[in-house]
Image 1 (cartoon, rainbow, N blue to C red):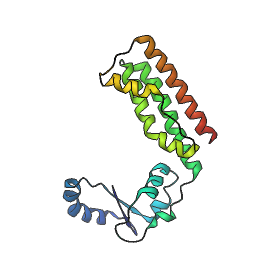
Image 2 (image 1 turned 45 degrees about the vertical axis):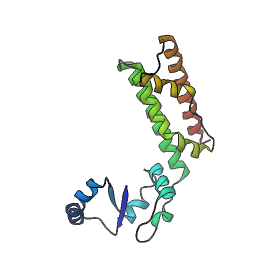
Image 3 (image 1 turned 135 degrees about the vertical axis):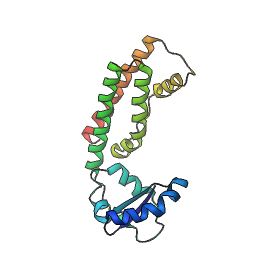
Image 4 (image 1 turned 180 degrees about the vertical axis):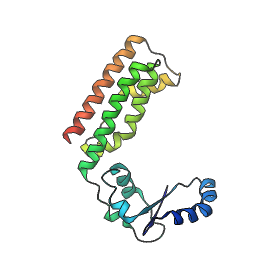
Length: 174
């Protein structure tokens, strides 16, 4: 991704850029984002994970490094992660009710949760290890391993417990 910071963003500027940049960006798989400094500074509360990642991993190609002025508040990060985990919990329940393939439902929840565990580790300042069943479900989904219904039910129970534990950690901000 590439961020271009402009004083203000107007349709005419985007249209000019689109005509000259779209083929080059598509060819080189570059996804440019155009932001004003105001937009960046007012977005760290609604995109705390993204701005935290940008602050920690960016490279300035040209101009001033404005990432130093981005403030990602711990509480905004906590709220975002709590929402993501609770949404995962809700989606998992719904998938178990309506998805015929229980492994698919479980795998989707695990994949989503795996993506945000690093950020949860940062928030809680505690390494949250992925349970062993994460890898087992991955192998099952890939067709490398089989599972009996009783064992699958036990894993689903463990997953609900794990989701609840993570949500409670985030909710406490610990």
